[in-house]
Image (cartoon, rainbow, N blue to C red):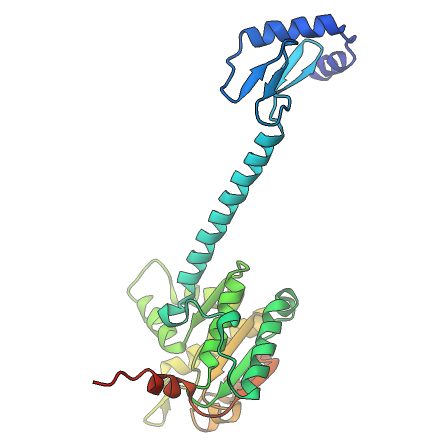
Length: 297
């Protein structure tokens, strides 16, 4: 209550005359250091040399320093640069964590070679729309199953999606079940993270991109391998959490079961999570590019 009374008295204080105001400024600025980019007028007003704006605020004999227009602009620019640097640092950390690798680290929709079949062009449009409507995609837990022949651009498209969303600071993990298996095995000897912690982490990330599903060894000598159940656990966790997931594969959903040996319940989950099924067909553009870049010796 005492502080409030002081503030009220301060605001209600009788206004000083112009002469008294000037004298108050004179007394204040006589004891204050003046920087090189400011000056004191004959009326003892502290001004900026650049914009001629006031560098003080006065209420009767109460005087405090303040910033002028050009200082405010400079401060805003510095804050924007700092924010930009923080975003760039955050993006790089997300990018490194995403496991995109050197081959796809600069992949984006703007530098794609669109001299390809119509199904690829349509796939690009749908993948771009996925990124543009990310908030809606995230809320609905929407996903993509991208499949087709080797070298037709599946991994490239998923990398474009990943990089596009990373630029929006969306946590993305680009991986495959070979890498996941390695990380799970690492938890057996590394006490910093348990297997369940790792599975929970995979289940919680905003967007998980699983590349080349169907190439894992899930059946050996007629028996399912330990990875078979782990794949189901990870996919089921994301299904329950309604998390967006992108799968790329050389195989159709049917062939994941009949040819690759994945459990039907796993593939059922993948089918439910993949609200868009996109097929790419045609010649392997990877082979075409390799042939074109062959160096004759």
